[in-house]
Image (cartoon, rainbow, N blue to C red; front, side, top):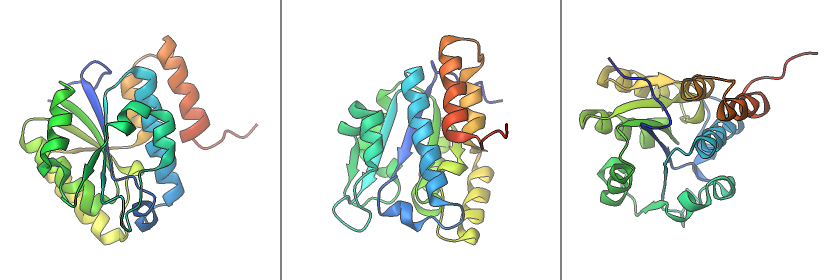
Length: 197
């Protein structure tokens, strides 16, 4: 049974949230996926969770990483792993070394696209003994079919599928703590639909 993901035992991995790749998301609203990915980055900042960012071929159609990530997590952005073209980030020695350097065995992952950039990385990490939660509303695919197949493959391999608000709540554990108060504010401002007054 998977243990609770806490700020002390978890790392966040954001894979290929790039200006170009974000435009490939069609199964959900791309702006929503972007908002959720940035909310995960903000939650990691609030909780001091180590974060590994990676990009693929920033000088090509994929484009640079979202500039907002640099504002939210400047150190992680500066240290991002720029892959030369390796599809499965887990197969990139620099990325894998950066993940291992966090010392965390619980990994929260989101990737764009789900069906190319996230699925293989998540499955391989589970295969090497990591607990992985894949955040589906901070990821996305060009086709509903390929998204669905990727979700099935990940679940069959032992990846836990989740959503941004769920994983933030799991990490918070207590809304009344100082960090919990910041996280619930983050949820209401960035993640949840507005409450009608």
